[in-house]
Image (tube, rainbow, N blue to C red; front, side, top):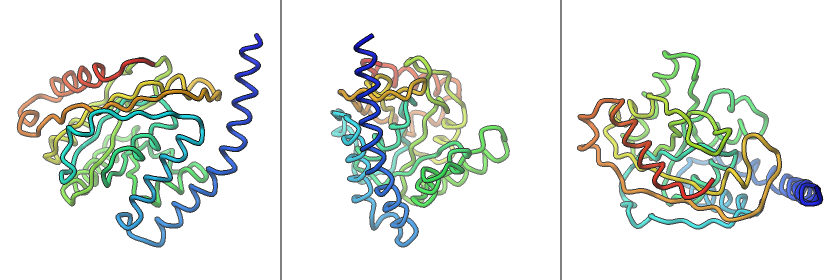
Length: 240
């Protein structure tokens, strides 16, 4: 009981000072997105996202970046765990990358302004036609040299385990002609899960897998590719 009370008190403190700082930071990045092309402030924006993760108590370790070619464009596929997925992956991957996110998130105050201003792509999950239009836009961005982050589960896990994968992200990979990079994040479910507002400071591991070359995935069926990437991501997750 005392441990639970301590966690609640700590979480209230973290959210209080965290939001006092987070709101101006997100507004600042949003303003940059409205005034300048994204590539101009990309490094600064990534640094601010890393700062936000650390601000809430995340102690991040990154493994596997040596597997990536910094001059290439990739389709990054991490597991989907927490509100902190975006600042974690966007902040710690040293690439110019933008995300494909649920369209309803673009309607949220502040968060919606932020993700829209930096060039993230909304996807209407309830409409096949609108979803396909979003994938075509993402494929165009990839061909133009912008890496894309898309979470194949489509929604945050409620249990800490990998959820079912959607097919659209894998159609995007084959449409865009791009290598897939599986990513496993560990520790985010304990840090801040979907089912609780409690934040528990602690270790977070971002583990980058070896890229799956387009030449090897282009001939696979969507079902085969989905199973392969799911296995790769699962192997990269070490703890909830």
